[in-house]
Length: 118
Length: 113
Image 1 (cartoon, rainbow over the protein chains, first blue to last red):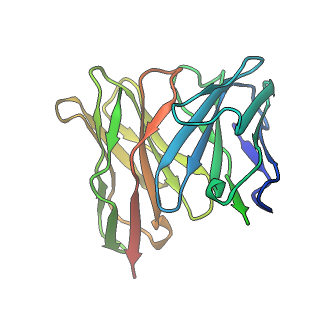
Image 2 (cartoon, helix red, strand yellow):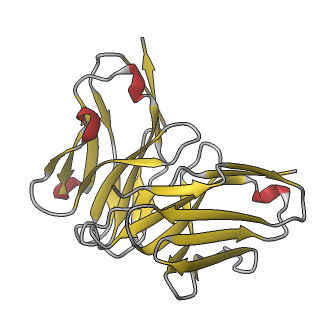
């Protein structure tokens, strides 16, 4: 149980295009989803927190107009990188918190999506 | 704000040897503590967690970690490392159950045959 799936796992796009990454909780309802960004050989940096049905909360320095996050249901959150540029190339990882494990603080992570902008 | 420090960026151990990965956190109260493992190009898998109770917690794959309040540490240990344990290990801290997690810089483990 508690599986989180991300799609696509890899995407290559041209500069100036937009890319959407989906994050789904397959067998549980995700009360909260978090989007992280990871540069090569570095740790995870939180980008934003999203709760179902409300606007995402972005961390300082993260452009909300650049990284659009939608949490339309309890099982789906999407991250859209708008007008992507080479500096947006990175590994994006989503994570979800389950109602069942709400008291432990545990997060369940997707497999990650590697974005390469040419 | 809480912070997490993993002092060792790289660690190399021989297969069969014991392992200890260090993690120190900065926070006034007892946080929620986690160890995750990441294989190249993959997401994160939870190894173990601590939020209350016995300070020595057992996880998957033979890992354990001990919460030491006096040292603000949550070190990860394994008595005998296998080649398949080679990966990146992240310690993470949460202020409470509903809070986001703050990650340490990670420790890359390499295993020599």
